[in-house]
Each structure stands twice: as C-alpha cells, then as structure tokens.
Image (cartoon, rainbow, N blue to C red):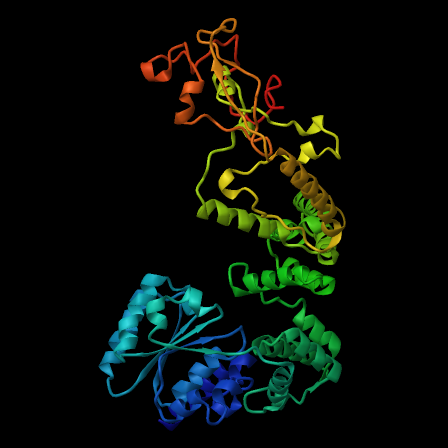
Length: 534
C-alpha cells in the first residue's frame, strides 16, 4: 500500500511539473494576489466577506491576466468549498445541469461554480443558471473580459455583485517574474537561472499588464537557454520568446469603443500626437479601415466643419485612398487625414445649425412652401401665384439690396436664425463677414418693401394655344415685404374668374393642360425648366 501511495504521489508531482509555469505559480492565498488591493486589502468589503466564509455570487470583470481565475480558486480554497470550473466557450446547459445535480447531492458543502468567459453564454444559457444562484444551490463566480452591463443579462446582474479587477502594473509584473524565477518548489528556482536586467525590463514592458504573458515568455526563454547549456536569460532570448506583442483589442468589445472614443476626442481636442497614437493602436490591432475612415469623414463635418471646408474633401479622399490601396499603405492617407483634422481650426456650427433647424421642424407647424419659391410648371400653377415675384439672384448686382431681400422661410419661422458662424478659421475670416453684409443689405431692402401689397388675378378669356382650359396671369401689382407672393384665400375668390371647368365639377381640364402647352412635372421639379425656375 505504501508503494502505491508513493507511486501516486510521484505521478501527481510529474503531472504538476508538466503544467505551464503560469499555472504552477498561481497564488494560493489572498495575500499572494497582486494588484487588486482595492478589493483584497485588509478591511475591504470583499475580503471581510471571504474571511467570514460568506461568499456572494459575483462576476469578476477585468483584462486578461489580471487574476480572475486565480481569485476564484483562492476563494474556493479559503472557504473550504467544492470548486467546479467550466468554460462558457465549451460548456452548455447540459453541463450546467450535471453540476447542479451534484451540488444537490452534497448539501452540507458549498459548491462554487466558476464560469470562465461567462459573456460567451447567450441569454437562455445565462437564465438557466439564475434560479440556482438565487436559491443558493451554487455560488456563481463568473469571469469576463467584457463589460457586464452589455454582455450579462439584467436578470442575472441583479442577483450578483460585480467586482472590477485592474490590469497589473509594471511593478506587479516584475515581482511576479522574480517570484517565479526564485521559487524552487513551483517555479524555476531549482534551475539556477539568472535574468538579465535589460531582458527583465523588456519582458515587463511587453507583458502589457498580463501576468500570464510574462510567465509564459519567461518559461520559453528559460527552456531555450538551458537547451544550449547557458544559465543567463539575456535580452535576445526574451525577444525571441515574446516576439510581437498581442495588443489588447477586440473589434466587437469595449476596447473597440474605448479606443475610437479616445481617437475622436483627441482629434476634436487638436492633439495630433494623441490622435496618431490612437490611430496606430487601431490599425496595428486590425481594426476595419473603413470604420476609421467613416469616423474621419464624420469628424470633418462635425468638429472641423466650415472652419476649414477643405477638411471634408481630405477625409473623403483618405477614405477612397485607403479603400483603394489597403493595408499596410493605407496608414499613409489615414494618418494624413488624421493629422490634418487634428491641426485644423474647429467649429461645430454645422451641427448646431442643423439641430436648431430640426427643433423648429419638430416643434412648429409645417407651413406650406411660400408661393414665390414653388416651381410653376403648368399654367394653373402660374395662375395661382407659383413662382410669382421670385427674384433670380444672378440678375442682381452683388451690392444690390434686392438680391438679398428675398425671404425663403415660411411665415411661422420667418426671421429665425439657425446658423451662427463659428469663431475660427475660414468661417470667422470669410463666412461671418460675408453673411453679416448679406443680412445687413437684406434688412435694408425689407424696410423699403414694407409698404408694398399685391393683387393676384386669373383670367381665362384668352385660351392659350393648344390648351383646353388655358390660364393666364396678370402682372403682379403688389408684393408683400420681401417679395413673397400670397395665394388667394376664400375671401378673394371674387377677384378671380375661371371660365373653364374646375376640378370640383369633375373635369380634369384645369389640372391637365395639353402636353404641347406645358411640360409634365418630373421628379426633378426643383431643377430649372424652360425658364420657369429663374
């Protein structure tokens, strides 16, 4: 029997030696866990609960290598609980049911169910564990690298505590590496290896806060050094073991949204250094080129705007160029556009103008288009005043007040100012001055027109050639201030006569003039047609 025990112990030791270094040196107590003092320092709520053996169901949220699995195992060991681990990537509801059945067979011992990558489970799978965590059949500890607010359903979140683990700092990574190098029982201490200080700094920097990355690279470098009979792990060995660092980035997760947010704010804040840094972070992580290009186009319109109208053209050109050449050369047009937008003058007047106009559209009555702005494509329309007294801007000199006096808004929003020029760049130096002069000239013309009036008459005594019910119009007699034509209302019916049948008596003659007399109205009725839209 003693021999069997010895053989079993040797097999267990051999199996442990085959485990990766990161698994062998995993902390076994709360005091060995580094970098999470905000949760586990003496006196903190979570530590007090664990030491009192009152473990709540929880979700541990943190970046890779921050110690989520380690903390769950330490909790199980500290509280003398039965620990069952499963991965949401490979396990399903059937596996969950087996764990629940086993937990019910040992009611005197708490079962801690650790679900790694819990965000991988869909809503139905997450709902399946909910009642068992709620009634205490199992104590749930979920681990996730994604924001639980988005990836864990609300019903489950309301029944667990969320604890956020922080990425390890360089000091913590260095201490973990030194411990592994010196630990003769679980680490590399028995090999009598030394780590060059330069190699240590490089390893810590490349680990990027991930203890698992640092330990895996250390173990690989140690094996390579021993294979050639050396005892010093130098910089070349570490560089060969680390290779290119894997950036912490998920194109569908928090890193994606956080990084693009930093990029946008850096460009908006006119910091070219930060802007190109975040651009490089995205491109080197494999972000979609067109996603970045779309954001540049939006930034050009939203944050640079009319302060530098050329910005939009450059952003669109960058999108086309990036799409045309692809990576890695796409970084040139994207970086050029990024730096141009970051250093350009800024104005959000475009967004403010549209927002103000949108509010007016939503909050006020949608009055009809003023008659003088309507396109008169039939005799009836001209007879009703469509297009009458419209002033074709190019017929007036630049300094002629009549060019600027025409009103284009409906009466219920007349005089509203939606656009106010910004105070930077082209908008301040050119647009603001020109707009002030236009508004000044237009105001003087409105004052001159204040006493004008208008009569509108429709005469059908002389049918137009080819028309079944021709409609003629008399020259305008009056215009109301600014030249806006007014349609005749019901009280003015006595001032007009229609000898031809009207639509009310069942005839379409007044609505459908002969084709040779009037062109049919097309989709592009805003375009000039036969001089009507002057």
